[in-house]
Amino acid sequence: MKAKRFTAKNMQQALRMVSDELGPDAVILSNKRVGKGVEVIAALDYQEMANEQQQQEIDRQLALQQELEQAKQSTGKIRQEQPVFDQSNVSTTAALKEALQGIKEGTIAQSAALDAVMLSEEDLQQSISEKAATMSRDEATPFLNQVTAELKDLKNWLVSQQGNAWNPTRPLSWQQAQIWQRCQDLGIDPSWADKLVSALPEDDDDIEKGWAQCLKYIAEDLPLADNNMLQTGGCFAFVGPTGAGKSTTIGKLAAQYVINHGSDNIALITMDNYRIAAHDQLKAFARIMEIPLLVLEPNGDLSAMLDQLSDKKFILIDTAGLAIQDPHFSVQLSMLKGAGNRVKTLLALPLTSQARCLQENYEHFKPAGIDGCIFTKLDECFSLGQAMSIASVTRLPIHMVTDGPHIPDDIHFPNAQKMVRLAEQMARMAQARWQTSEVSSAMNNNFMQHGV
Image 1 (cartoon, rainbow, N blue to C red):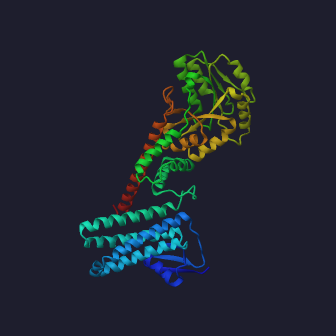
Image 2: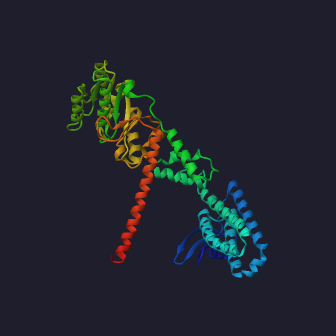
Image 3: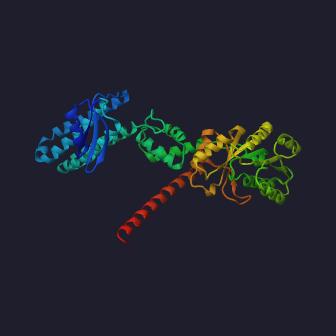
């Protein structure tokens, strides 16, 4: 392979230099801006095959460019009156056509072609505006509309061929790529975002309409628990990292149950024997609500303790938030498994955690046989997408959402539409805060430079 470096004032001139010296079989390996120009590295004996879809699209773009050239030739009189415009217009159009021809032959990388088109478009738009000024209004309007549409199609096609960052084998349309990025702003997991965007029509140019449809898909894909634990009762064990809000959530549920059904049919169990004063909070709850609290000793028999509480309809079990490397974690896990199907395990997902932390928490407690999840600390979080992604991807039903420390008020049953709207509001607020911060930073820099 023969490689050579070229430096020119603009990309059009660089492409002509490559073509003149290395011929039409040259391939652009890289390009970058240097000083007041651009630097291009090209090589020979480098082939890259284009697929059938790319070939068809390139042929269509070349046909459009040929029609544009024919239209310019039919206006020879205008070109004679505007010689400077004609030379620039032919030059920029030829460079654009040359870049496309290089893609067709599989000899110019897509990134370099995209840069060439962007640079050509800027010069071409100026030339087109000058030409439109010499035309009548009736002639100029259709001409500008046609060229603008062609340039838009060309940019959209080149961008779409770059594909999805998480699935390069499936290109996205320009609109789908924009919506995929909005999903990232919401904190949506890339794999879930790809699934959502794939369900949108590719030929829809209305981004706002597509975004509204995507939000609808998000709400429909959220798994919500189909039963009310406060009404149906049952035995529930709460697992999750330390500080996730397990004990506080148990206190809220217990208080809600006592208010609606009395204190005769409810009991609390704690398995947390590994922290100092771990029982104090639950003891205070139990004393105030006048309900029994049982402490399960290490290596105790949870199933036997449940037999002692067979007359209770609603049993809430608190666990220790142990790390996976803690030797007591496997002991606690085996105690939960020993109870069998009598206990439903719910994972407490603190909304203040990062996406990676939530994923690791799920994998950490997955051996316990997780039956659902509870979103905690909604009042302290700034993004909902991460937790919603965990629930959707793992298909964990969302049972409750807590949004404050107050007992028994700050706990609610989930509403998918409300959560999605709140997630979008959080994303918009975060964007507004960053924009305000950037403006403030720029103003401060300006003041410092001028000694204010």
